[in-house]
Length: 386
Ligand code: NAD
Ligand code: MG
Image (cartoon, rainbow, N blue to C red; front, side, top):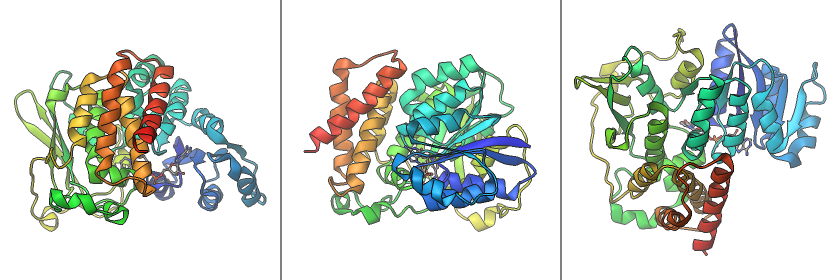
């Protein structure tokens, strides 16, 4: 029985993780739950999974949450705010923490979990992208495992099992292509929020769905892959694979290529991040090549999707630059979802902010430098978008 804590329990990653726990009560139990502001869903999850500690990120909702839990037949700890989320992340005997919070807001809770000796099932890629230079040394120092739950990185990690050290030569990340993959570039000027939120293959939270439409999600995943697997940017490629059946591939030194296949279902990478190195039997729909049908591939269009080059450039710069790229992207996506800017403004704003950051770039940032870079990038996007 593995004790786990779940951050972002009411989101797409959160609810799919709880689906796994619900169907494997003999394998997993929930120690802590943290969510942003959905009191109704969180309270229902508490009744079902009986965590020892609960956090609601939005402090203004604490009274409502306590009220919703007033007639529980046990007494969990109930906390709130950013500090409360950190408390949940580091609490008790949880062995593994699933990070399903969206954005850089997950950084401090993830660091707290690492310092409490907990393994990380990493869905919250923004945390590693912004905080790589401080997160990776902490993972080493505290001897915890950083297990990828992003589908592409899980695929790479699965392919790597059995590959000896030094055997990996190249990573090939697959991309669905996002909402606009079949739209001519000139039509991007008139797309709406609703259009951008229609992902062809995956049902996910709003932020990552917009990132998929700009292909920034794939750009962020290139940086995520660099930090997770230590591969040079020259050896991380992207291929568009509209069917999302091959979740990514690796090339080893002798040019053999290994791939991981399956239906697009996030529960599989989440389960593997929790069960590794074991394989747990499930009753999920079995994979079938004939039903999957034709698998096709094409090169990503880097002119139509400038976010790809922006992410490679920020990754290659390293240091504080990925934090700026990520912070600028988060703010630009928020403005787009708020109908304040246009879809094509997203890469333009990010590029301006990354360019400006060259003046006070830090090669070996501290945690404070990263938090400051994130905040600064957001402010710059707000200023440039006026
Ligand atoms: P989502 O918007 O559906 O859920 C986000 C969750 O985080 C919610 O429970 C929300 O309440 C909580 N949250 C947000 N801000 C918070 C804060 N400040 N404090 C505490 N809780 C907060 O997002 P999602 O699609 O589940 O994505 C979560 C993360 O997983 C993202 O980093 C995303 O890139 C990554 N990811 C998601 C998928 C997917 O299929 N959804 C796939 C790969 C990676
Ligand atoms: Mg992914």
